[in-house]
Image (cartoon, rainbow, N blue to C red; front, side, top):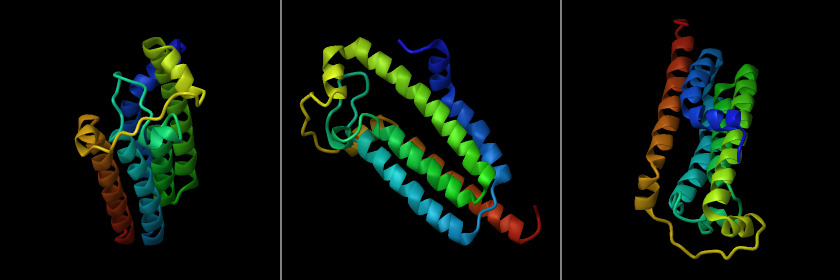
Length: 177
């Protein structure tokens, strides 16, 4: 079982993300170059997330196809890379520290909580998978599955955040902020 604080932090990570997003926007100092590089890095993270979401059957099975063959937590890996992209795009050491603190604390809590749930729900099947002893499934990627897993939210959120950084850069270049 995961510690109570980890469980609360894992459940609140999205709402906390909005608070951190405001701080990230406030401290960001993007340039065309940082936005271009950060967006590409962030897109790599989102592609990993999308790939994972297109294989995941939440709470129904221990998913072992697609990126789950290589890592137990591809959604969190993708999120971490996406967060790195935001930090690069923001071009701010304060943002880099904020992103590191947020991603480390919330992803660690989410992994603890998720693994406790999977062990409770699937027992030996999850332990075999976690120990690289479980069978790998050969399921194809499904856009419908990615949609059902609501990955469109992460895609939209990243796109909106990049646009906000572009707006911040534009306003700074005009001396408005």
